[in-house]
Amino acid sequence: MTHADALPWTSARMRDGARIAYRLTRGSGRRRFALVHSLAMDGTFWDRTAALLGDDADILVFDCRGHGRSDKPAGPYTVGQFADDLAELFTSVGWDKAVVAGASMGGCVSLAFAAAHPGKVAGLGLVDTTAWYGAAAPQQWEERAQKGLQEGLAALVPFQVSRWVTEGFREANRALIDAAVATFLANDPAAYVETCRMLGAADLRAALPGFAWPTRILVGEEDYATPVAMAEAMRDAIPGARLRIIPGARHLTPLECPEVIAGELRELADAAA
Image (tube, rainbow, N blue to C red; front, top):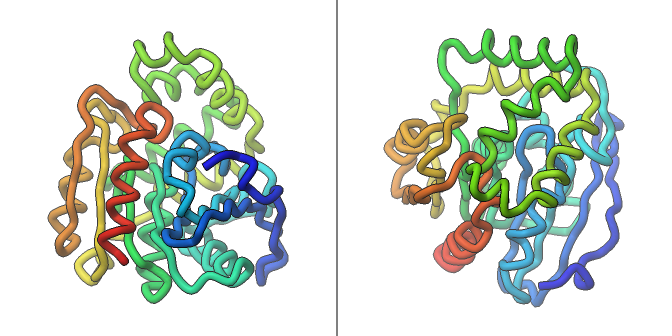
């Protein structure tokens, strides 16, 4: 699928008045995907993967509230709120259900979506993510948020980039990483703080045993942000979930190995059909 198949970015107004930016790419409609980006990125995060999903795919990407082209209302934010935004976007584009997949923060949102809107889920893709960051998460996320607020987001870039992808990939794909850094730096600091707090508070573990659709979990072997153990915990809690550990990859596998992610998502859509 090429970008020529994509409709222009537009937006929909949510029930609370916030406008959420989205882009719908239309294929033949045999497969349908809703893709949720990671923290401090935007919907273009999925471009490399979306281009490989095939010309039979309809693909919805969006900028989560507080990110990109979407409104950045005052917090607090919750993963349930982000999930409800996606449910309203389904209504805006006339979708009843889709394969829902998210990376990192987007995975938490996808879990919240599945918990709150199970009838809208055909299949679930959980990429480089977790249902719970752990008991120390509120403090750890608050520390990161305050560093970005007080020292500027640029102070976080070395830490972020080292986690996103491997050194070899970074050296071979400087333009791609530079673009991701530019997206990161363009974030509104206050919205970034609220989103960090949201992730620190997120705990979707109780919902997992009730999930009843095909689920694929993917994680980079060298993911330091949401390590393999977190992926294994989700696999063990979600009935029938399948886990794939991607050798030599880190935290943002849709950037580092989009062909692997796209292949898994296509198979997931087939299993969900």
